[in-house]
Amino acid sequence: MNKDLNLAVLIDGDNIPSKYIKEMMEEIAKYGTPSIKRIYGDWTKPHLSKWKNILLENAIQPIQQYGYTQGKNATDSAMIIDAMDILYSGKTDGFCIVSSDSDFTRLATRLRESSQFVIGIGEQKTPEPFIVACDKFIYLEILKSEETDTEVDEKKGKSKKKPKETVQKLTPQVIRLIRQTIYDCADDDGWAFLGDVGSLINKKQPNFDPRNFGFYKLTPLMDSIGTVKIEERQAPNSRSKHIFVKNISTSKSK
Image (cartoon, rainbow, N blue to C red):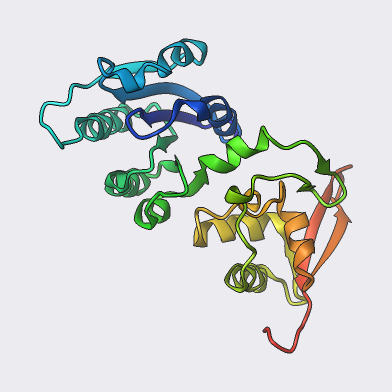
């Protein structure tokens, strides 16, 4: 990922709890520089009062949007209009849309059509259409859960204490996704560069994240499967090492 990307961060204040802001901004920084940071809502409403001090601490600009009609979400419309204005300004390389609302599905698609990298961030209740419309989708719950970890097994890269409600089971479907993607990226000897595998998995399934399954990295997740061989190789003309993976043949898999 290019860490020099200029990102516009647009937050649906009516839809996202304020308790996630610290971890969320730290996560966004992994993907680029949040040069535009705005949050939308009706700031005359009491339920948004918890946001006020947090906005100052994180230099996020609040955008006032009155709810003109009962039952209609004016915040969504304001975010969409601003996103298109920002897009046409040509000052960004990508957008981070923070919401669990499927109403932003078409916006994410439109931004990607204009070659913008789109990150979605929302709670695990986020509808599938919005998730798959993004290049990458991150669940807020896994960001918050990292703060509660008391110990990490460095060898396995796995948390020894995770809130049960945030950790998903490594299902046969997920394992098939990983193994098939290794085949898709493999050379004639069956080896695939882990970086290529991770990128392709995210293209196939934008909400894939090792942290969803209690792992901090992709390598230990694959090691836990038992049907993936992992090999560390010295990079040419460099002190760094690259990780390669290969499927181990089983009677029940390809």
